[in-house]
Structure formats: C-alpha cells, structure tokens
Image (cartoon, rainbow, N blue to C red):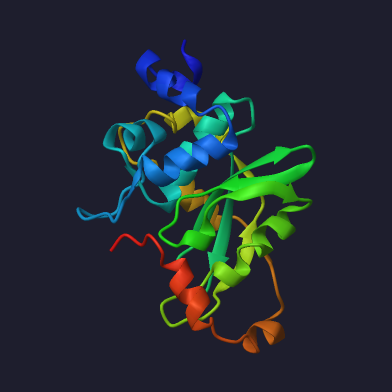
Length: 204
C-alpha cells in the first residue's frame, strides 16, 4: 500500500516537497485560495492537489499530509478568535522547537520557522497579524495539538467526500486562553500600515 493511500503520481508531487519551507511555498503559490464560490468545502489533501485550490483548513490538511510523508506526525493546531474566523495550522517540531505551515488570505498568518519553544509561543506569534476588517485584534485561544492519525478511518488524506469531522473535532476540544479578559478589553486597533501589509496578495 502506498503511503497514506496516495497514488504514484500524487507521491511524485509530494516528493518534491522535501522540507517544510517547500511545502509552504507549494501551499502559497500552487494552491489557489479557495473562496468557496459553490458553498463550503473541506477537501482532503488529494482533492486539494487535484483541484489546485485550498482555504485555511484544506491548506492545513495538505500541509499535515506533506509533513507526515517527511516523517513528522501529522499535527493540527486550532487558533480561536472572537468576531473572526478560526485559523488552523499544520505544526511540526524541529530540534525541540515548533514551527507551522498555514494557508491564509492574510500575509501575516502563514509560515512560522521552527524557533518557538512552546505552542503558546507559536500561537502568540500570530497575535499582531490576526485581525478582522474592523481592525480589531481578534486572536484569543489555541488548542492542543491534534494528531490526524485519529481520522485514518475516514481516509482523511484521500477522501472524495468532505472531511467535516476534522474541523468539527477541532472546534469541540478545549482551548487555552492567550490573554485574560481585562487585557483583551484594553487592546488597541491595528494601525493602517500593518493592516495594509496583511492584505498583500489578498484573493477577493
């Protein structure tokens, strides 16, 4: 059986993605941002590769599969926000430090080098870049890592049906707070330059 159920042709693509940086580059430039014009989707990595499109959740699944083929555990981390969408990362650990691969329409919510000692450090690195259209800083909580091998029974890497069980599980597990409510109440707005920088490359 081929790894993760991928075909030889699919594996040929993944073999070129032989580092986290190359995986992120592929997610950024070879998978168009999925604006879900025909309604919500949760494509498996196989479908994302075939359709050459992915949004945040689909990009994280693709990144986790590609990391898994490099020998990393296929781990996801959910970032939870207020008045905003959640963001999902495919995370990996190198030399005792955490990094992340991510697909986002906002330039500051993508790749992180593996330089963060803890998952909280990794999560908080997204804080200043995580904002809504009202320029509110919206990131509040983060989940524990979720190993996608728990979803092998639904063939999460190659399923032709949407794999909604995964985001549903991520939304249902406990999340840790990144800052106390009193601190959140005193947050300032995002300045115009940072806001504009985050929209570089935005798919409308």
